[in-house]
Image (cartoon, rainbow, N blue to C red):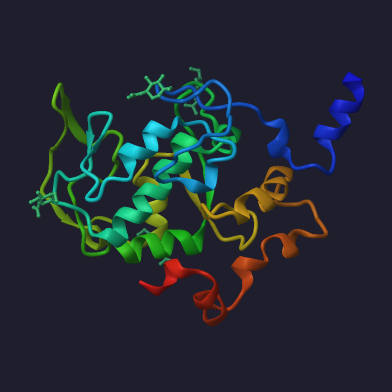
Length: 233
Ligand SMILES: *[C@@H]1O[C@H](CO)[C@@H](O)[C@H](O)[C@H]1NC(C)=O
Ligand SMILES: *[C@@H]1O[C@H](CO)[C@@H](O)[C@H](O)[C@H]1NC(C)=O
Ligand SMILES: *[C@@H]1O[C@H](CO)[C@@H](O)[C@H](O)[C@H]1NC(C)=O
Ligand SMILES: *[C@@H]1O[C@H](CO)[C@@H](O)[C@H](O)[C@H]1NC(C)=O
C-alpha cells in the first residue's frame, strides 16, 4: 500500500496533495488544513498554513501592523499597493506551496521563490508613488519593542527600486526571484496550483500540458481585463 501511495504522489497527481508541510514560523500551522471564515487570502482557504484569525487581521485597510511589524512607517499605503503586499503576506503565511522553497537554515524563511516577472512589474507599478524607507524589509530597520522603525528617509518605491525585478528580488531579502518564464513561476493566483508541478520539475524538462496549465497568464492583456477584475483598477 505504501508503494502505491508513493507512486501516486510522485506521479500525475499534483505535488500539492503530497506536500503536507508548512514553514516553521511562529504563526504557521504544522500542516496545512482547510479553514472557514477567511477574510483575506481566499486562494488558500481549502489548504492553509495560516489560521483564519491571521486573515482577519490582514484584511484591515489601511494595513497598519502585523505581529509588531508596521507597514505604515512612511504613511498609509495606497489601496492598490496594499493589495500586492497582502498577496505576498498571504503566500508567505498561508500557502502550502511556500515550503517547497524553505530556507535550508531558517525554517521560517523562504528563498528564491520564482515569481512571475509580470507580477513583479505590476507590483512595482501599483506601489510606484507609495513611500518606503527600507530597501530590504527584513533587515533595513531599527527594531525595538515597539516594532520596526525607519533608519533612512522615506522615498517613493520608484526611487528605492529600479524596476519590478529589483523590487521582487530585494524587498523581502532573498525570498523571491523574478522569473522570466511565463509558466514556471507563481503569480499568487489559482493558476499557481496548476503550474507547481512543472516548476518543481525544473527548467529543462519538456512537459506537455504546461502551456495549457498556465493559459490564463498567456492570454492577451485585452482578454485578461475581462476575466480578471483586479486589472480594472
Ligand atoms: C489564532 O487562532 C489559533 C487557532 O485557533 C490560535 O492558536 C492562535 O493563538 C490565534 N492567534 C491569535 C493572535 O489570536
Ligand atoms: C492612515 O489611516 C488611518 C486609519 O484610517 C488614519 O487614521 C490616519 O490618519 C491615516 N494616516 C495618514 C498619514 O493619512
Ligand atoms: C546554511 O548554513 C550553512 C552552514 O553554516 C552555510 O554554509 C550555508 O551557506 C547556509 N545557507 C544559506 C542559504 O544561508
Ligand atoms: C532592473 O534594474 C536592475 C538594477 O538596476 C538592472 O540591472 C536591470 O537591467 C533592470 N531590468 C530591466 C528589465 O530594466
